[in-house]
Length: 263
Image (cartoon, rainbow, N blue to C red; front, top):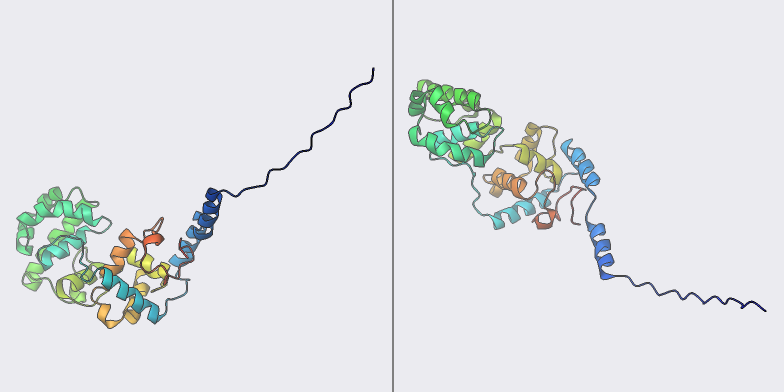
């Protein structure tokens, strides 16, 4: 008996169809930089090595900031120059929100240097114990209050040198007080402004003083009084440290940062 001959059926290849999801993923991959690249770009930015924005780009950036928020204010709560000074001293290595939770009770009892000095270090310490480094800050607040009474007639001085001579007051704190209390055109470079200046290329520098000096040179006159507020708010809510929200950034097209997540 003869064996049946096996006949193989021809294999018909189905035409490949690109799914819309695959297309969407391809599009996403083209616009979103991988995290390692962002990290590398930030290291480069922190060293002040990125290209600088042009003066025209800087002016356009501030024009947009002003259009979005015409009168920016500090988020610290205060009632007079003295309480502003105290709030800024307390905000070192702490959040404005955390400081704002503690200061209403403190300022209800002591809103002048005379009252703060009379309140004493122990009582101040108890009122601000929810804030980081509260022991040292209480000591500085009471000490600067005594100095204001003894040397400045109970008034907050309007000079940088006199402010920086107070306990717990550095250049950044002095700049905030001069700007917010007295309307001076100063640039208080905190961690947010340092990051923004370097990351965007608006004012690159290896330390806060270098960034401040660059801002002094490049920020156009009409924007100088409010410049540091716009930059702080931008760094706090949009150009955040770990994963900047480039998709909602109003200056993304001007930004020089190679790690930005929109083209």
